[in-house]
Amino acid sequence: MALHALAYCERLFYLEEVEEIRVADERVYAGRALHEELADEDDITDSRTFELESEVYGIKGKLDAVRHREGAWIPYEHKRGRCFRGKDGQPEAWRSDALQVAAYALLLEECTGKSPPEGRVRYHADNLTVRVPIDVEMREAVVDAIARARELRVSAERPRITENDRLCLKCSLAPVCLPEEERLATDPEWEAVRLFPPNPEGQTVHVTTPGARVGRSGDTLVITGETADKELKTSILMRCSALDTPFYTVL
Image (tube, rainbow, N blue to C red):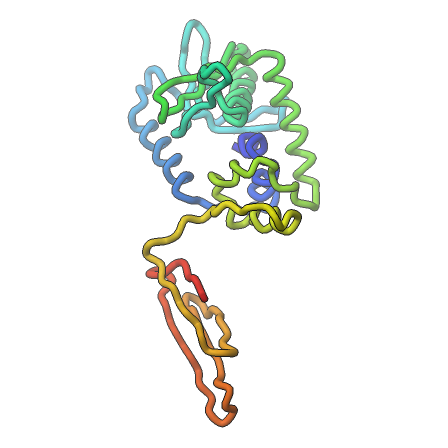
């Protein structure tokens, strides 16, 4: 999974694996639910899940499934989304998915002593399976990714945000990474993309008292202030349960 994050975005990898910051959003929970469903439905005579560790590559991971196909053990990775489409429209694995399943293939190879000819990625939104050849190029990609991961682990600086802002739209760590703010800091003309959809259950608080201050005390939104007349001091106190109104807009 760490190599998958690295291929998706180096900053994501750094936040999760070096700073150990992880945020679960609806996409993360949906992925977990998919794997739980697969664990209940898999035929144990045809599908096995392994947690493997490699002394050669210094990596470990839990394979979604390993199936015996065409005389060989093949690692499978399940994704709830859609596959990548090449220029000719043919289904392909996303680079991050291909790297992940290739790493699983190397783990399986070291465990069994036999080289899997390919890995397979199942994209459930498309209801199709994409094959990833475990060739020399794919093996080198895994080795290079492992080396880059080790470089980042000893770095004291976060990598730059990705140049592909579309990746940020589906990233659970966007609230921590703050890619929009960083892009705007370097390019004031950049048109920010709203990463966080409006919350229909939230409440809007209008603060119109001059000198009012907005703060937080535990799960309470506290607004305090004084009137212009020093002889008359007024305190504005509003308490909103964080469970009922998780987002606030202060105008």
